[in-house]
Image 1: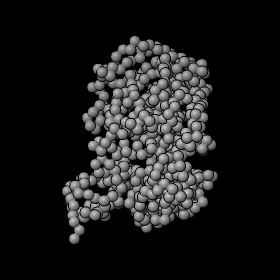
Image 2: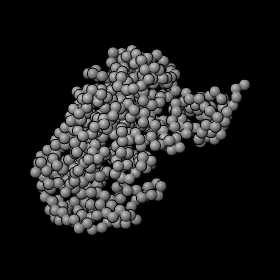
Image 3: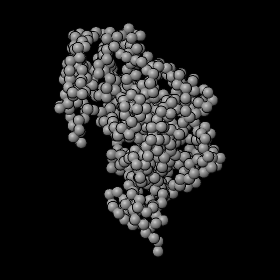
Image 4: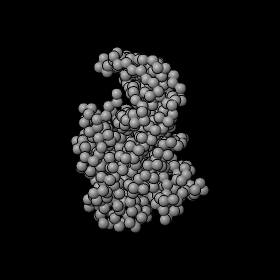
Length: 554
């Protein structure tokens, strides 16, 4: 008879299982027919795949698609199933998993090969077949040379390039039946775990749809974001021309001493795009208000300052107004579900006064700007009086900049709306994307430590609330923008790595942020360092985070 061991399962309590059980076997014991909803497990603040063996007195939390870690596992696994299906239908073409677009993951075939409407149904049927076969997914570490040989055999040249720039003795691979690939992070135990999915025709590629963290295992309705899709398309064309689509190619340029040119070209592209936006604004005499919004750590402040410079080149003299100075008094601030002041709620702003001041300015009248005292929680007199005309466009930067309710008194013809976000321009390889949220989190960690007196624990603590606020106050309005600006720099993670790695290494498994710190450390380990920062210009958006910027708007 097999010996029994005692374990603790969150939400269930104490129970006994066989001493040689895996986490997958235990989840089947606990959840019976619903076991496939659980894709991984958290033990001692660390995420594990379900093939891990169970040990005495383990405290286990099983992860479903409603939490971020479970969602990531589902995303990677359904991507693997999609890649396998395409490999059978289009054996001569490489699949590129590109980026998220709304609630779906955009993918396409390499080169000029498009996926036709009729071919999508073939892919979907093949995916169903792979899921129904319940193919075991085995995670394995193999010697470096063997891994390179396998990647070459399966046509993963992007992975070959990457690993040849890294000092590794072993390579982690996934075996799914006869197919072999590499993925950053865990996959489900078998293909049967990702049975809920759909595909949507999105020329020249396809959108992979699957449940979100808030959709209760139901596929959310796809909402097209054509402006965002265009920004991603333009970024991809740019990095493809420069052969900078994947981390391996970036690492090669760092190791070969070619990174200075990459930095110059990347920064010149930013400068060109900001100049084009300024030119567009100045060609329309009706525009006298510029509204800038974007998620945290997108570089909005530096963008606004650089835009102001280019407006001045065009003969304009922009004046900046801070939405933060229009906060209502503390006692009038809306509360969130925890009963805490919600400063990101639109109603935290004195919209009536804000709009009345804007109208006065547009009518050529003088106003005195308010100044919000954050210590007292009250609006005070600033003593700063301003008056504008057609040569003095007003720049308003803040999270609500694209919300139609912010400046309701002002006609749309007088507004120019800009969405700024760091839409990472390169991926780890063809099958492993880089999360735009992760890139912004890394930026914020560096800035918080250098300039805001927050350690990495505080940044993690705040981040959940920040991203939740973005889902409510920013992302729903991004398509309202007249222009989108991608503030990502293709080389930036190779700069930020040396700042953020020591911060993440401070976190041990006693912290609830341990699994996130380990995940980010593994991710950053793919990047070669850029040590010399002297070539980065002082007005670079990256300087907002690492230091060296000296902009002010007057």
